[in-house]
Length: 269
Ligand SMILES: Nc1ncnc2c1ncn2[C@@H]1O[C@H](COP(=O)(O)OP(=O)(O)OP(=O)(O)O)[C@@H](O)[C@H]1O
Image 1 (cartoon, rainbow, N blue to C red):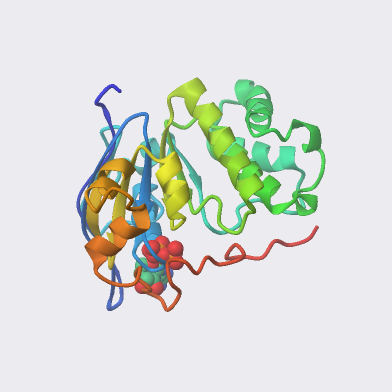
Image 2: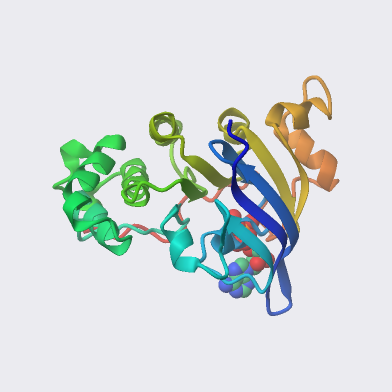
């Protein structure tokens, strides 16, 4: 580990009207790690990462990505980041290859390298064989891997994933993480992921922050956070210990109430 910071946030806030979504967050994410932002629906995770990914302006607070100021140099930051949103970002009418090529253009991959970058991204997620099929014919797990390829095509130093495995079966979830792990091993890419799958976070994340009502309530390695609660404690226990309630429920859906499907239904091509 180099000690270089991939992300630094200080005093980050955001409100939607009267709703305070993010209420003064400080974060330091070291380069090269997988960092998990955990919490129930409505905790403020998506709002936080959208500000880090330059998609939402931070009205208060400072954010730097690899030392670059997000508020002042949005375009420079965008070149460093691959972002996989919770909402569907693949076009079901385009082939897998066309979808990735579109992102290569959008993210300014130099024309001379575009074709090889697209092929490398498709290969890295194991979709080479189906690249000529329209995305509308893909399974949920394949769509998620296609979206990963879209985010990876610009060779980001920071990959930001919003609930990357929501609604996927265990095999598809494992496949998504396997691909992420392989790219990390090859490139040293940093990963920032939001999730409310606590077991997955315990397995995949080097460090996690527990978020509740717009604030970070605790941060550390999964092992540290669990050990602080008890010898047999899980991350869910660690979460309960800091929030003091039955796992959040900030929007009426509990932490355990995993939405069965992605927010936007897949169009069938
Ligand atoms: N565009 C918006 N307009 C109004 N309120 C919003 C908007 N986006 C988020 N909120 C509210 O801000 C709060 C934080 O939402 P956010 O989506 O950041 O939480 P989250 O932890 O990512 O949860 P989820 O997993 O459900 O997305 C919630 O109360 C939510 O209803």
